[in-house]
Structure formats: structure tokens, C-alpha cells
Amino acid sequence: MTEMNVQWKVELRFGWLRIFSDTFSALCRMILIFHAQQESAAFSYTPLEEIGREGRVVSEENMGSVEDDVSVVEEGLLQDERSKEYTGDGSVDFKGMPARKNNTGNWRACPFILGNECCERLAYYGIATNLVTYLTNKLHEGNVSAARNVTTWQGTCYLTPLIGAVLADAYWGRYWTIAGFSTIYFIGMCTLSLSATIPAFKPSECVGSICPSATPVQYAVFFFGLYLIALGTGGIKPCVSSFGADQFDDTDPKERVKKGSFFNWFYFSINIGALVSSSLIVWIQDNAGWGLGFGIPALFMGLAIGSFFLGTPLYRFQKPGGSPVTRMCQVVVASFRKRNLHVPEDSSLLYETPDKSSAIEGSRKLEHSNELTCLDKAAVVSDKENKTGNYLSSLILTVVTYFTTRGGHAGWITDNLNAGHLDYFFWLLAGLSFLNLLVYIVCAKRYKQKKAS
Image 1 (cartoon, rainbow, N blue to C red):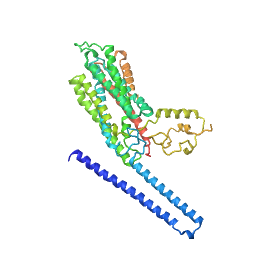
Image 2 (spheres, rainbow, N blue to C red; image 1 turned 90 degrees about the vertical axis):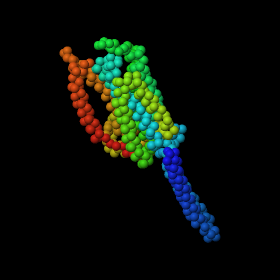
Image 3 (cartoon, rainbow, N blue to C red; image 1 turned 30 degrees about the horizontal axis):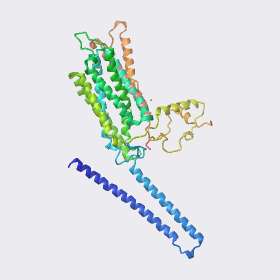
Image 4 (cartoon, rainbow, N blue to C red; image 1 turned 180 degrees about the vertical axis):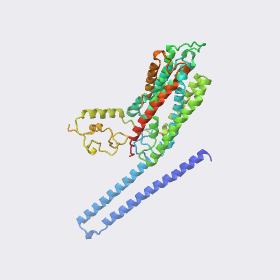
């Protein structure tokens, strides 16, 4: 059986279900209207000679009341049908119209998003995994300098998402933020590939023990491409997973369950990309050349962009609702200005919007908690964010190098690793990681899950 036949049978089956559902709804409306008309006739059937003018008025009022009830029932049925046809989270399609459940979002849109993430992660780890080797073997940097440059770049990669998140939430939306920053990312990948391919953009090979340093221009071209990638990942990293979650209606219990499954596939896609990069791409870089080793990740980044745009007609979009950073700052400022006010013990007395839903389109309200109660002052009615970890790694490298090379010692990290004590450095990192785990456990115990609307 061909794929087209299977698809045709599935569409036919769902078509019959839709026809049955529409027919059943119409039949229910007809029964209600017929029942209401019968009641209206019963009220108005009393012979004219047995009632006076006041009786006729009462009968007409009863008929009007029944007709109003019928209108309410019909309106409720229409709203119920609309809730089954359209999403309830405020999402729209690529034309800006309310998103229909039967032809947008859900799993039909996810393969394009998952393909984008897999290819993007393959491109990122294809650069990051073996970058120290490139800096030491091709740009002829020392181990400490190369490690510091890599950790600083990785720290920037985890800091730029603050820029992408603000632009996505307040101005562009997730879709256009991903599209724009993916283009920047791709330009950076191509620049990096050219710097590793064109002889003028890289220093000459070592002759014996003499290794010429890279010129300022060669450094500029290489790091320009590298930091374009850091900027590009800043618009992708905070948006792709959220954009995937937008494809599932949080007001629909069935789609809410599917959203959890999506995140499983999302992180599986990340790991597949990282696995291919850490094995195949690294082997190509070490054995077939860095031009090809950087060019293949650039190609996959191009595929990521193509995959993302192919799914455009199927996506659900959330309109920008303003930056959460701005709202957090407003809360802090309001709390400071009202620092002398008394916070009532009953949290229901704090200011709250009258609507059940959030005032921010596409969002939902969060229940009041007993954490950070100092910020409750912002809601008193008066009469009148682990982004800098890699920067810390650069700092640790600098501090360790400074203290371990005092007094003429070679230090823990040397250009000749056999003469140093890299094992001590890794033991230090293991101890810091253990402390980080303890902090995580404390934070995880205090975590409270957000209730679905």
C-alpha cells in the first residue's frame, strides 16, 4: 500500500468522523429548537376567549424567555464547536488567523523543528568539540590561551540567548528570531570554513619546532566567524524548544500530554547531533582536513535553516507579549518604592487582574507562592535568572595558571602536558562540579510546578 493511499484513507476516515460530528451537533440543535417551539406552542395555545389581554402578555413573555434560552444553548454549542476547531491558547497561523487544530501545529509541525535542532546542534558541536585542537595545531596558540579562548567563546554562546529571548518575547516573536539569527549563524559558519581553507587566512605550517603565529588579520577573520556563531546561537537556543512547545495547545488535555513527549524527542535530537559531531566530524577534521571538517557543519546549518522554513505553513505562532525582563524590573522597582508599606497576611488582598486568564496574550497566570515574599510589596494597593559558567571557567584557568606557575614552577597546565599536572586541574573541576550538584539539589527541592490552566 503506497503512502498516498494510506494518507488518503486516513483523511477519508477523519472526514467521516468530522461529518458525523457536524451532523450530530446539527441534530442536537434541531431537537432543542423543536422542543423549545413545542413549549412555546403550549404557552400560546390557550383559547383567546378564556384569557384576557394580560394572559396574552404573559404568554408572549414566556415565548420570549424560551427563545432566549434557545439562543444561549445555540451559542454554547457554537462555542463548543469553535473550541474543537481552533486552539484555545491564542495562537495564530502564518497568515495571522486563529490557528485551526486540524491543519496546524501538533506532531505534523514537529519534524521540521526537530530536524532544525538536530542539524544546528551538529553544526555547533562540530565546531566546539575540537576547537582547542584547531587553535593549538593550526593557529599555534598555547594550551592555556587556547582553552581560555574556547571557554570565553562558549560563555558568550550562553550569554547571547538573553538578547534573543528579549527580541523574541517583546518584538519579533520566536519564528522570526530563529529565522534571523539562523542566517547570522550560517554566515559565521561559512566564514569559519573559509578561514580554515584559504591559505591567506591561516598561518603557515610549522617547520620543525618553529611555528609562525597568526597575523592580526588572520585572527580577526577567524574570531569574527566564531563570534557570529555565538551571536547566532543566541537567537536559536532560547526559542526553538519554546517554539516547539507552541505547537501544542496547552488548553487541550490531549495536546498537553503530547507536549511532554515532544521534549523527549527534542533532547534526543540534540544528543544525536552531538554524537555525530563528537565522532564522525572530529575524525574528518583530524584526518581529512579542517576546511572539510568545518564545511560539513556549515552544510548542516544550511539544512537546518531549510528544514525550519519548510514547515512554515504548518506552524502555530504566538504573538509577542512583551519582555519578561521588563516586567521583572517593574516588580523590583515597585517593591522598592513600596518598601515601607505593610504586606497583608491574606494574599487575596494583593492586587490581581480581574480576568481569570493572564493579561499577557498567550500566557497564563501563576499562582501566588510563599517564595520571594519581599516582592509582594509590589502588589500592595496603596492609597496613592546559569549563563556565565564558561566565563567562570576562563577565570579559573587564569587563576590556576597564576598560582601554579609562581616561584618558577611549570604549572598544572603547560604546552607540554606531560610536564604539567592536568590531573590536578581535573580534580579541581570535579570538586566544583560536586558543589554545583549540591546547589542544584537545594534548588530542585524548592521547585514548584506551574499548574496548567
